[in-house]
Amino acid sequence: MSAGDPRRSLPGVDRLLASDEGVALVDRFGAARATGALRAALDSVRLALADPAGGGRGVSGTTPGVAPGAAEIVALAAARLRAADRRGLRPVLNATGVVLHTNLGRAPIAEEAAEAMTRAARGYSNLEFDLDRGGRGSRYDHCVEEIRALTGAEDGLVVNNCAAGLLLAMQALAADAVAVVSRGELVEIGGGFRIPEVLESAGTRLREVGTTNRTRASDYAAAVDDGGVAVVLKVHRSNFRVTGFTEEAELGELAPVAGDAGALLVHDLGSGLLVPAERLGLPPEPGPSDSIEAGADLVIFSGDKLLGGPQAGIVAGRADVVAAMRSAPMCRALRVDKVTLAGLRATLRLLLDVDRALEHVPALAALAESVDSVRSRARALADACPPELGAEVIDVEGRVGGGTFPDTPVPSAAVRLTPPDVDGFARALRLSDPAVVGRVEGGALLLDLRTVPPGEAAALLDAVRAVEAGTFSADRRFP
Ligand SMILES: *Cc1c(COP(=O)(O)O)cnc(C)c1O
Image (cartoon, rainbow, N blue to C red; front, side, top):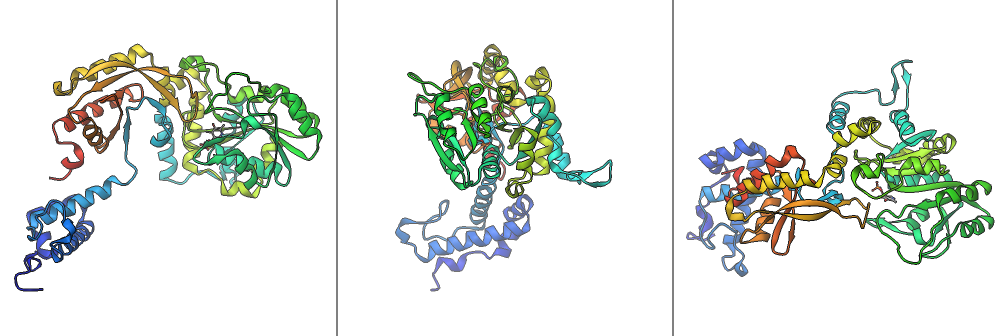
């Protein structure tokens, strides 16, 4: 290093820590993280100074070829730490109008469920302990009563998610055997979860029947007659529609076909809607109890779609069939944890009373809210927005989401904002704390209020005001 090298004038970590800015950094992020970030900031500054030409690559916020001062280096370290803090799982205000937004964590859970989950997480519990007898119990007992009451099935089992439920069903009931599936139902559910591949990984041989648009009960009957069939699998078309010249065999027609051949009728339903669809303003949609009533031996559905609970897969059906799944080795690998069980049970208990569920289960409450009510909440938000944003209320169409009701719009209302830089504004809102995610459409930012619970509207307004004033919280956290 030559005498005139700007690197010589860089302060050391100790001096940085002792500066006013350094003390504030330690206050905010703790000594260990602050020190680490200062070292990293110094390294990047040294690197940039060693190669002043650097292909134009300096350190942003510093002047190329000039040693930055202590305050600048601390600011670099603070920026690093803030960025690191933003990378974890962060709360989001969902203003997209998509109620079950898979990328935003699907169903927000009820307060009662959150409390039950916190209690289960904080301490010990009788997860696998029978308090009455003082001996070993089963984790699988905890939601059974509620699943039976809500589905009419003899027994129930909870696993990690619906996909796990289907995989376990095939492994336990049809490994080295044949499952009959309609060609119209060999679908991809999402994220590469494809029915033929699930069957393959469970060691189940697939026998396809019918065609993409039409499959009749007689097609299944012919396939079952060829022998070796352990399962007749029906997959609910939850995330797409087949329209036009179509025909599909009903579960009720398939029950005798499967029964006569000694095969099990399994229904992969997906969304577990446990309240009447019309109470949510939605078109008719079968629920798990419809599957059981129609004669399915097993129905499998998600905990975090229209059920409105935590991520889980619920299997309900005939006692001997559920017992076979419970004792299958794979069950252990797909098992549900105590926190989920606690939250799911609390949610299922709310669902035992439809009126209570519509009030307390957030996803259901969001869908049940009248469009007039959403519109008046949007009006109140628009009126409170800074005038520079040109806020107005418009009618929009939201979605149920989560791969359900693919072509059913959910009438809603949004606040339409037109800041000069819409994309920059939307990004700043996403980087707020809590983050706000809306929709940019036609040069405007739309904030759909249906998916923002009334209790969170104030936080949404705070974020909008802060971004408009240029003081959004990602930067406000640290001077
Ligand atoms: C959503 C869905 C699944 C997968 O559910 P997860 O809980 O996400 O695993 C499986 N089958 C159907 C029909 C679905 O709609």
